[in-house]
Structures are given as structure tokens and as C-alpha cells.
Length: 154
Image (cartoon, rainbow, N blue to C red; front, side, top):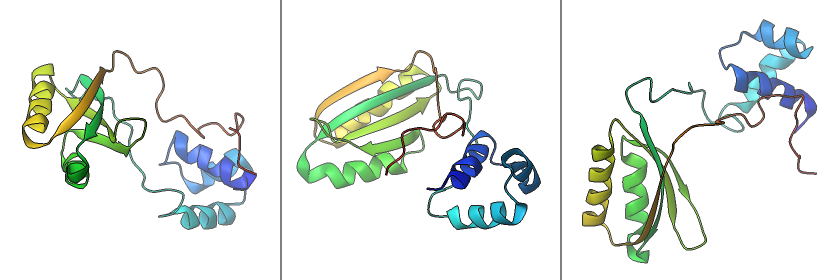
């Protein structure tokens, strides 16, 4: 990835609604180049443009990250169930003894506990660990500031 791309992506990470003229003036890159680069990112480097929400402000103060170890025969079905569930914000395939990690959002703990109970009723979960988020210290900041470039692949 070229330095121009990092500069443009950093602006998009800060505010995906910026006008091309603003991105151009902040990066010193011509508007036509900014337009072409952003168009080229669509569906590749940029999967989607989305708002970062304050879930507690919206009435969903309970966020938990849970890891699951599931019977081998149920992995595909379990993963599909998590990805389709409306209260599951993110799902990842992981390693080191667990198969999935999910970020789950609920308005109250009883709703989250009911969700976990239903998972146990429907699937053969060998192990589960749930971590309640107490305070969000940093979220969606990677490649947000072009001055603070991360280690880049060579």
C-alpha cells in the first residue's frame, strides 16, 4: 500500500462522510487521484462504510466478548447461527482451544444470559468464556492517523 493510500484511508477512517475536496486539501493529493483511489478501494480494501455507534447511548449498555469451543460436527451451523443473530455484532474464527469469538450486544444482562442459555440448548458447546466489557478505551482507531503509521508489510 502506497503512502497516498494510507493518507486517504486515514481520512476515511476518521470520517467516511468527508467530501473529496476536504480529503484532497487535508492530504495534498489531487481530487481526481482521491476519487480514483477511493473508487478502487470499494469492495477490496474498504469492505463497507459504517457508523461507529455508542451502544449504551442507544439503550444497549451490555457488551460481552465470548469465546466458544464447539463440537466439530456443529462448527458450520454454530458459526452460521452467530453470524445471523441480530444481537451479535462481530464474529471471528479463532484458535488456541476455542473456535469462535463473538461480540454480543444486549439491553440487559438477562437478555444476554438467555441468549447464552439458548446456545447451550441448541449446540454442543465444549467450553465457553464470557468477558463483559466494563469500559471501551479504544475502538476502530487503526490507520486513523497517517502520522502514526503502523508497521507495514514489506
